[in-house]
Structure formats: C-alpha cells, structure tokens
Length: 121
Image 1 (tube, rainbow, N blue to C red):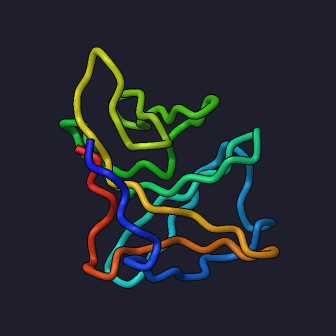
Image 2 (image 1 turned 90 degrees about the horizontal axis):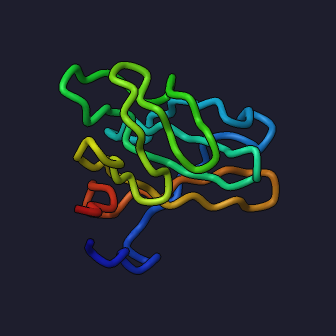
C-alpha cells in the first residue's frame, strides 16, 4: 500500500453541507472530471471513493449499502473497506479514495492536484 500524499497535494472542493448527506446512504458528486461517491457512516465518519465498481459487471458505488465501515457493491455484492477502498476476501480489487474535510457545516473533498485519487494498491 502506498503512503497518502501530503495534504498540500490536494485541492479541496465544497460538495455540500453536512445536512445534505444522509447516514449510510451514498451520494454521487462530480468534481471536475472525478465522479465521487461520498458516504457518512452512522458513527459520523466520512469517506469518499471513486464512484466506479471494481467488480466485473462495473456500475457505480453510490447506490451501495453501508454497514459499519464496509460498503456492499450494489451490483456484485462485493465488500469494500471505506477507509482505503480495498475489496475484502474472497474477492480482490481496489477503489480510489479521496480525503474528506468537514469545515464548519461544509463538506469538502480533496482531489489530487495531478488529477488522480489516492491509489492504494
């Protein structure tokens, strides 16, 4: 696993307010060329992943079901760890992740200045 990039390598974009996001329900946001799925857990943790399923059938992740800190892919029911985008056994794969900042009531997502996401694999 690669180390996260320093914060200065990201540009943060406001994607809404805390109240715009429901617990355990993903929300799709577009930031420049990045299609991102944002999740708020029932424990108040925030995660952002590339809104693209790593599964063989493709699809998006924003419609997935969140249980704790695991996302269930809505098409193939793969389990994806929200913290680092890692697909859990017995399946394999990885999804790009993006840092989330809460500033006051604003939700901000960090997009790498080089245009990619955290490549954790």
